[in-house]
Length: 91
Image 1 (spheres, helix red, strand yellow):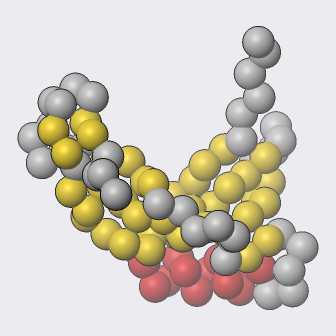
Image 2 (cartoon, rainbow, N blue to C red; image 1 turned 90 degrees about the horizontal axis):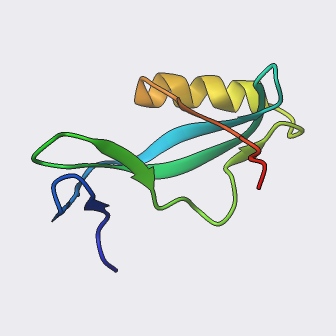
Image 3 (tube, rainbow, N blue to C red; image 1 turned 180 degrees about the vertical axis):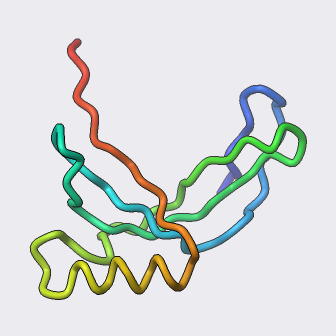
């Protein structure tokens, strides 16, 4: 599978960290919705980063028992939880 390409530098990005937690949020209040694992990639030239390579299913959903505990455990394990806020665009 091809690696992500840095549009600015036109080179393949490199994996920085596998399995970083990403919290998907929704609504005006940015409520927690789903917790995902993805891979953090970085351009070796300009250092721009992206998260790609998500699993087919989230590791936890907001309605799961223990969702907050799982979120906190991932925050401790990785040192950071990245946020992804759902946006709706008008066409």
